[in-house]
Length: 127
Image (cartoon, rainbow, N blue to C red; front, side, top):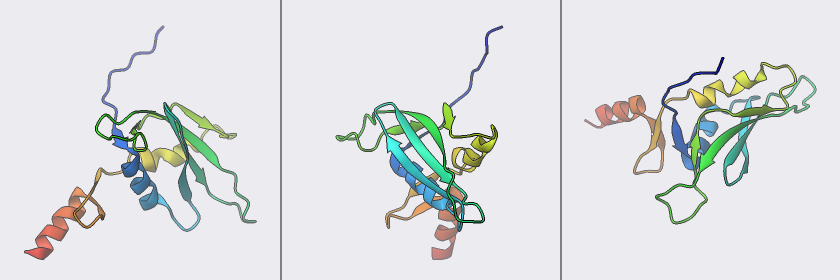
């Protein structure tokens, strides 16, 4: 039997992905962009053990050239993980769910990244 799938995939610019990662970093839970290649982006995650040892895993996402930028340093990333490297337990890929399922964010005129709710709240406070 062949797998079936028909869904809409979320696509973000690498700048949006960087902001999403920054929002999800915590005291011990760390995310970072490990590598950007022509067709893939690697996002790292680490939650050090009680001795401070990192044991990072890496989510691999497909990407393609941003057609609206003159440079290729801001590709579009498809938020569909195609691989999870160093996932020895077989379920650690779930650590990337908060990145994949994060709220939509936009940069305002002051270079701040906001969700729709945060932007609406700011607007109401100014009124």
